Image (cartoon, rainbow over all chains, first blue to last red; front, side, top):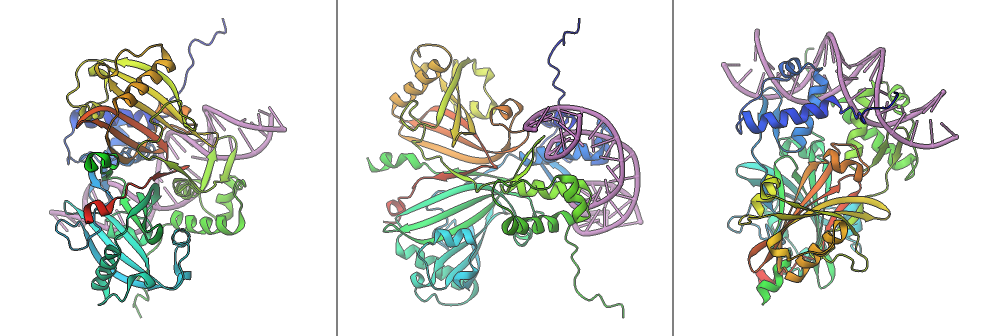
Length: 245
Length: 245
DNA sequence: CAGTGGTCTAGACCACCCC
DNA sequence: GGGTGGTCTAGACCACTGA
């Protein structure tokens, strides 16, 4: 009689709680509505606050909730689709450009992040670093730093944001004929956190782009997108034959 | 004398700890090496175990660490680049195909996930759901479910994996001439967790693809990639000259 | 079996927002 | 000031791994 009846797989409390809350969000809450505070929710479900928070963190990771210190927890709208197609934002100042150039610095080769230096393989000499901020629907969604060897950028005029725009124009003038890009998960560094209106460590999608001209790398950019509010969309990469035909 | 000397911004302990550990990983540890256990690390740095764990979770999110229950915490290798180019894996059984078809089910329209039903807009009637698993370097990296309306798939032969492959061949035969894809952050559902050798809730990159033929959606796939080990790479979607010229 | 990471608790204090 | 979420603690027990 020692037969084990069924394979009892005790589901963690926070996981079950997440499911329960998720269903409650679907059926009983509207977008933007504020939830009861954490202490009350924990009491209501009979768990410690830390356990409740583990469930909320999961839901926030999935983009279902927004939590703001001093304010409360609200139901998040569905993630917005953010276009990351090859040409998007490549032309500063173009109508509908979602990017705002914030500044520009000239870095010595040794001052480059290791990953960037690796992608700009043959590069020697100083490198322009252009910082941009992307805003969508009145909300900051991404920061980017674009690196371009000074030798390729000519003599960008102006200072600050104006100089940054000049570097971007120089890149565009080169007529890059291809890109490599990759997407990975990261956590927002402290310096970017305030710009994106998030706490340090919040999850972000890091999009690394390599701009190619005649087979050589002419620029590299690293953009960090808020993972909670953004769904990255890639234009129709496969439709080239459609257009060409 | 009440002058506040500098603007003291107390950095959270776990954040500082993460920085310290990150530097230690760079300088004192090799890939694959196991770290001291959590209780010892916590004692060594004079923090509670929960605080230490918060720092470790950050580092794991960034792909720097691997943690396995019953085993320990090890230094992770750099993330592998996983190709997500439009045609990759579209041909089951092709040489070098990283995907293994696991099975196939026929779903009633009402049984579809809401997000999938929305993308398969005009679809009526049952839908094939093909499940695949992607392995890279001997390690499972992604699971995928591909949805294709039965009306478009003909009469796929066989059962299980064989039937799934037949559906994929039918899709390939249609000659889809374009794709939409998007990437967002998610957490691995319980059923996929074991397949990917992760615990439920682990972060994943969800790649949603819409296959188009003559402007109509002929299939939709949702693939979940392990965010800790994968860096998604997109081939040269380029062709900026198409638009710039 | 001993050792690891994973879960959970009950409580405290802090930083921030808004009134 | 009062309320929110964010950080931190010290402890307990559980699930899993591998010798």
